[in-house]
Image 1 (cartoon, helix red, strand yellow):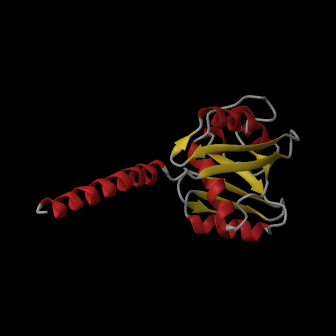
Image 2 (cartoon, rainbow, N blue to C red):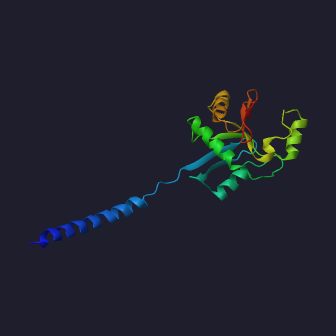
Length: 182
């Protein structure tokens, strides 16, 4: 009779371990899915569209980043350059800031070769001699349905680089260079 409490204790311990171990294993196997970072872009000069998840959590997806680099190529020459991925994050975060994470962004200008940059400067388009576009760190954008002034204000509030406001041409320049505005 003295062993009955001990046997009950052993049975209870066995049952608890039998139930607890699988529960722990199950709860550990339910890992949080990494956040997808998606961009929907439309290029005004090429007529191309892209809808791509370029990052999962803190991991960039090399093939998707390559697709974005090609999509943002210089539309005059066809040359592409590897973009600073912070520029893609800036676009994504800008959409989130505007409360429109799934909206399509119109691309006015992406990467520019030095030749294209010189061409635009010579034809009086107010282009900087050392533009961040040539470094693949800048994109000129507009978002249908969003006022350009609201887009500018959202970009300024992020304080993540340069913001140029071109009200007459209806676009905003965003780059990941030094924080500045014009």
